[in-house]
Length: 536
Image 1 (tube, rainbow, N blue to C red):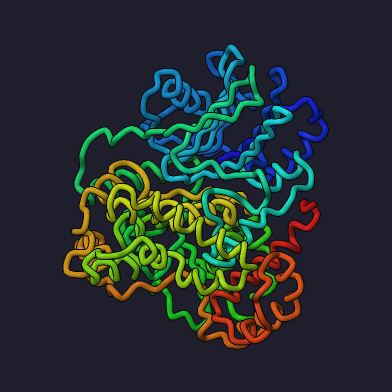
Image 2 (cartoon, rainbow, N blue to C red; image 1 turned 45 degrees about the vertical axis):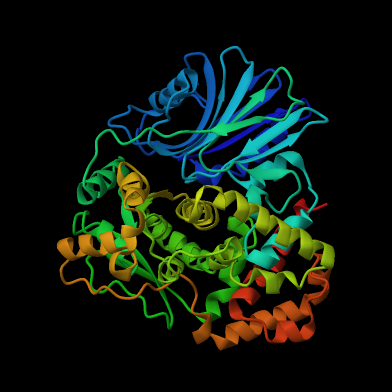
């Protein structure tokens, strides 16, 4: 796991670039380096996982200059240059990219084109910025490093409106004007001879699994690949099916890490080598500030606090690598929304589908100034229309990928990497994703969420108690004091919220606001505080 950074600019000197690279030290504290090629500066920090060998950073492979963050799961690849070589081969030959999790930058030997890529499911994040007037371009694994390069940026008020209405920023924008996330499965190509021209975006295809396997075998193979490292590997374990299923493939003494949230009722039961941290209502504000800062965005996901506490627990025990069960709910249809869609006979209008993911976004949009409200609802309709272009089942997958899985993966990456911990995700590799999607609506056989995984865990762990899914989130219904504190915080910050565009949010609305909405707007104000130095 590593951090990557780069810019095409004549205004960034080596000292500024090195300070920006320092913002990524937690992603790779073992080594770092930078290189120049014309107007391009390229940097990389390194957390070695697959090889103890030292390499010059950033590496040069067959004349290509590279910056690379991630892992490739294809047998014994053979270290950093070999992994980069596989990416170069795929790019040069116009073929499928290897199975893995990665974000990369590759400069062609001629220097004519710079290519950025993000893996098919968006496991590794990559932010970028382009100024066509100046012909400048920059990118980084995390926002603070990119902002250190660019200096203060304008707030994107459309993004504020998206967060207020839906709980997320739509369309891979960020809270800063002009800075975007590269979408999952996307290849970006910049013409270095004409950097004023907009970069070209094209699909990054991933190779199919080398052979077709039954689900149990495919998951076993993926767990083995994801566990391949010279470092000790732990597991983030909840009481749910997904992580317990992964645990069934691991040695009994493998370290397991669990966050126990007061009054949530979630616990994995008796386990060997189980390390537990606890989150209670009294921990909320300190955790929220750290988590929002590390996530670098406001969010509706209260689980960022739980991930922050888990990351700190894992780090205290000296681990650099953990397995996660993320992705199983999206691939195997494990959320209540999937069951609700099945119970409706999959007869949903586009707006009803959007409501399954964003809740009552129309009501929340009414807090915004009228012009912002109209624009936010138009963006929801536009995004939903694009998702629904190829039928409902494909629309469900696209929504799951872009507005459920990608934010969860970014949460895991940013929160865990804040403590120098690599997250590995067996449900997202090998033949598992294709096997899941190939099951179609059979994933809800008998109106059971994740029916294939329920059957698999019954075979592997016959005594496992299958229960209704518990969302991995804070139990605000059991924490009325915290909810009242959030409402008080928002009441005190009401002028700031009005200034951000929530012009019609009233004191009465704040006093009666639902806990989830109060959390989202609380993170908006906390984010504004944390990133004040980067805002114009």
